[in-house]
Length: 231
Figure 1 (cartoon, one colour):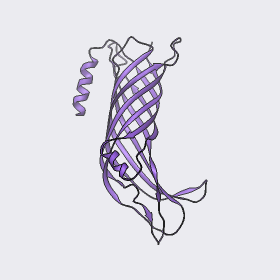
Figure 2: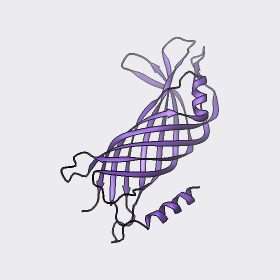
Figure 3: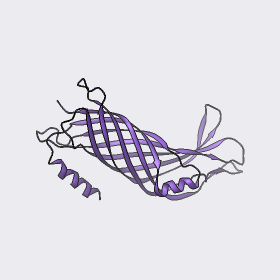
Figure 4: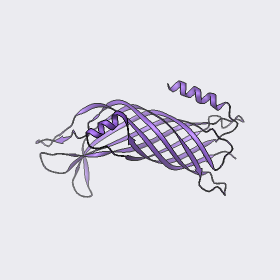
């Protein structure tokens, strides 16, 4: 699947006439669970949007040649908070579990329009490792908490989406754009701490259930990107 998508993007690329040399972006994301992941969260009464941040650097692989190429490749790092759960305790105290996803993705972005400076549509494909982290904390005071236990796992993560970059100030030569996009991300099944399964027993030890679960979500993204055309 990955090879087929790469070949299609390459073939499209050879028909274009010009393109950006490099880009750096900083994006806020809002994730809306879908599919079996949505069903799983509904069963735990924690179905809601989640928020996070991501940043990436992209470069034109043929930027040092005269041949134009409408594809940027690079990487993205990001995270998204997945919510928190109350953890019951048989020994008193205030405990909670917090869940977060981190990803480190390869990115391939296709920019089909070369002549417009005010707006630039794009289609993008991502894949890479995703870390699912769950941690149990004790809240000692309003300003202090410490980690009691935790569980992490890795899975493969795929994303496909598209959007538009709008120049922030069309009247000058600024290369800063506002980026709006919509993506669908799919994370393969991996072991993880099941939601609402953690507890602190009478001996003061943490216990939780581990099960297999995948993650699917739509991401609405909004942020800033700097595009360098080399002009």
